[in-house]
Length: 187
Image (cartoon, rainbow, N blue to C red; front, side, top):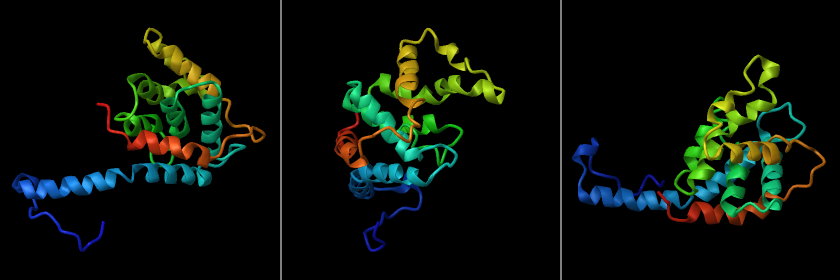
């Protein structure tokens, strides 16, 4: 924000006035309206993240979302699939929880749960190669979204590292991102 903008009168929140909190509410609304731009920038940043795969993390995200769209997923799920790994840079050991927290005000409980747990469910494909339990996801076998999360990983996430797969562009998904993160929070 511009340093010349009006500031609150307090140095401790408990001493704030109605006018102070009305000012902050206006600034917050303005800041929140920029969320789609920040999400899209984080996606672009995935183009320069973790090495070692045959595709960038951005391309992985685009492939995953393209697969979701081609399979007929709704827009909420497509966007969630697109951004499911944007937490990799800041939270490599719990990126699923970070992204789920970003999505939570905008998506259904089902989509939230899938994204929240996808990292653990994804371990099914590789954990046994690095000395961990590949079946850690089985603790959720009785959960109503267990199979949905298995399907997310199997159909969209684990298979989206193919340099020959033709993904839709980030520009294709941009209107969806803007719609989802511009709507009123649902919780």
